[in-house]
Length: 460
Image (tube, rainbow, N blue to C red; front, side, top):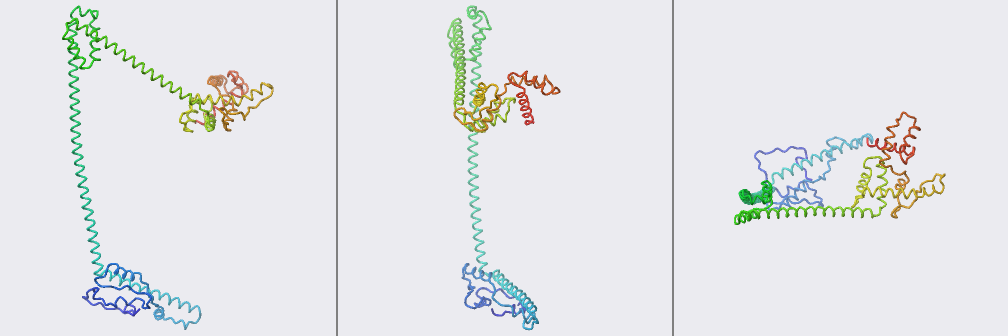
């Protein structure tokens, strides 16, 4: 690099009133003061006023990331006044070299700061960059203006569409209102005409009832005739009432009232027939529903229990021990919800399957008891499962348990617990309690009592 006033430490005086140089006024060699002139690195040209933006950007990009190759060690040695040749020892020489290196880095930093300042000022004053920035700004403003106009046009179209929809909605609302008013007016007119027709029928029948011959048709009971007339007023439509009134006016009094009596009889028969039909239809629907439910239960009962269902049954019988309220309903719901069965198992199915498992497990034990009454037989754990499905271990454990308690036996146990208080001797107390429980021994009563007590504790 060539020596410059800034590099030599001398300050250059600024001339007042000096204008910034344009690209044409800058010397062609002014941008080549600092680059390395070894021939390996070439600095992009500064260019003139016709240079393109990529060329200008390449020039400033080079100088923004420029790294000076100058060696400031000689200058640093002069400034620090350190001569390594005059060092007394190796440690002093190392110290001198470190000081020279530190000063050299400081000088290089100052030099790079000078170059960066020069690049920043050149970029700020370059009219070409200003022109490109202005063009970019105008282009950006144009795009924003175009986008704004597009949004305004879209907003205008949207508002026009909303106005059209509002007008159409208003027209529809007015049309619906008119239609409702028209329907309401028509309904009111029909009600009014129906009311007049009923009044005319009542008036005609009342006038005719004054004739003894006519009153004899209803056994001289005005109340019976009024009931018949009200039945006609309630059952007949407006057109039917008008036709009846016209027919009554065209006939003589007696014939007219006979016609009223005939129409009344037909109406009663028709209403009775309709009621019978409706009742028969309801009974038929109930019968079909009952048959469908029965078929569904049969299909569920006939379906063999899977291994998963048997396992779930075992878990449910342990979760809901005997003695709890609605035990088998809870077991049925537990199985259906756990396995997400398409056709839920009813409580009757669960009870039947549980009894089958218990009977299957206890059959060998009963056989052994018959063969040797004095011996104590154990239930066969490996008894075959129902429906040809091998029962899991949980099911076998449940099957070997004692038979389930009935509600009657639970009631007997509760009565015995209330009758014989806990202050009594335990053996005597439970012996007395077991005597009052049909089909259960003392040990079974104690086990049952503990199971109920544990179940109540778990609920708390």
